[in-house]
Length: 130
Image (cartoon, helix red, strand yellow):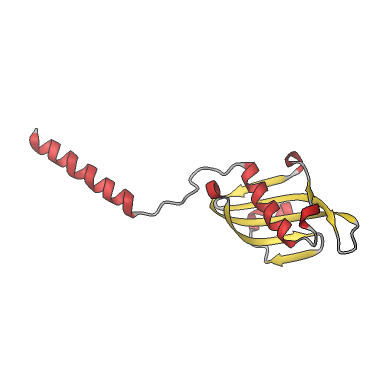
């Protein structure tokens, strides 16, 4: 009986040590749709000529798809161009999710209107981009 308790204690300690050594991904559950939209809008805003004038489409008009740690967000934004005219531009943003609890991601690809940044990578999302 005492040997059994020792074995249980050793296994428990080993699992505890292993758990503190192994680096588990920060996003173990599926990220929230709204989180992906906010991160995509942040990248789009940074690329606009007048980001303070940006009016993004309502979230229910956005398309969001997540596969593993890659998210694809499509929507539109109304913002001023260099001449002060308000224009509507469709956008597609593909990001690698790093830590959604901290809104941390890495831009893979972005297209705003006809301007492209990065290289479109996700074959899984190919049909959604057409």
